[in-house]
Amino acid sequence: MRGRATAGFTLLEMLVVLALIAAASVLAMAAFGDGLRGARLQAAAKEVAAQLRFTRAVAISTGAPQDFVIDPRARAWRAPNGRHGRLPDTGELVFTGARGLGPTAGEGAVRFFPDGAATGGRVRLAANGGGWDVDVAWLTGEVRLRRIGDGR
Image (cartoon, rainbow, N blue to C red; front, side):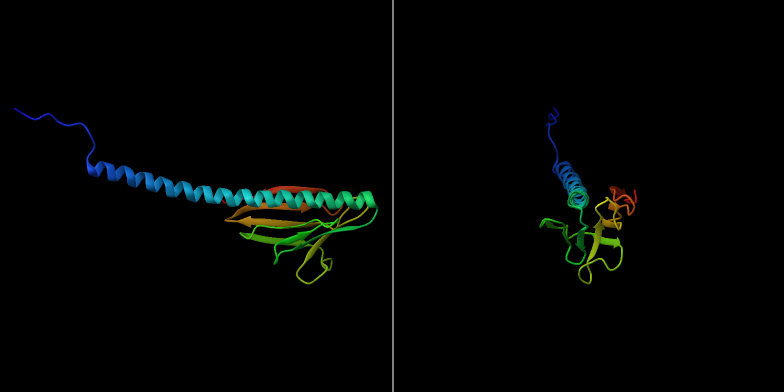
């Protein structure tokens, strides 16, 4: 008489399943970490765009030129009416704009005029081949937010 086969899993089967779960968890955490970094960069780019638009509105409403100042090394910005903030410490931060407008060495500025025009410029926030450009058109002062490629 043969013994009945017992239902269940072997130790080897359990170890394989646990290894698969661990590998999937590591991959998910890596993807989630990059997603959080991307979300932080997007939020920072949206904040910079909003503050540039605010600076333009102040210039138009007051009838006086207004500057949005950015310091890439300190990863900080300043806008009219005492507004200021910091940018994420991760990734690349590059400002491109007119020379000689920054109040101190290493700082850059976009100047908005009472007619809405600006000196123009770009703030780039990037990491891992992707990121965001905040562009200011020099003629119209229009502020645009644009995603840059992530290599996918």
